[in-house]
Image (cartoon, rainbow, N blue to C red):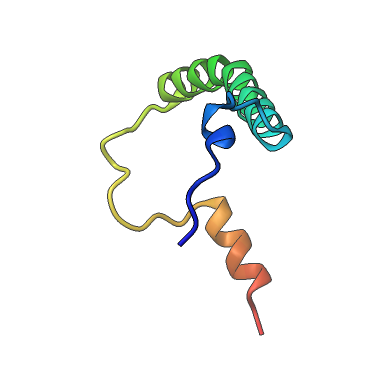
Amino acid sequence: MSKPDPSRDERKHALSRRTVFAGAGVVGAAAAAAAVLPGVVQQSASVAAAKVTPASTEGYQLTEHVKHYYRTAKV
């Protein structure tokens, strides 16, 4: 077995190109998420406020959407 190179242990670890690009990717993803996140929170709050659920929404309902599906699914 060979001994480790002492000069290698004494050197300070410099940032490699791979580490710099990986860090830049993480920072970019975090910036994109931070830019989108406030809009998502506001949008979900407005959607939740817009949903009014009447008591008769339980079970099957023949809505326009369902009628359209039945028309397009005919064989």
